[in-house]
Length: 117
Image (cartoon, rainbow, N blue to C red; front, side, top):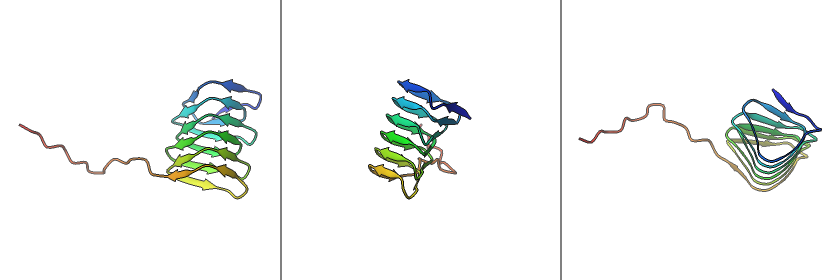
């Protein structure tokens, strides 16, 4: 797991390819195919687009994840959430809309396209 410590501040676009624990501050968009944990003292101002996210801290912006979004009791989110699974603990602050939808799945036995001659 990678760490972005509390004393780190980023202004710009953040991408990563392995699980990340963020305790610092970012003003910009966050994008990855890996899981993200936003620590209790972390602050994100921008969109978050990752495989999954656990939010303990503060997010101002939309969150889109392919799998699960967990919002813990210490979290504050101002923005919309789109996820396949969404859970929010009592005590969390969420101001926005949520949309729960599964990622598109591929058929188990796809039909072969017919061939035109």
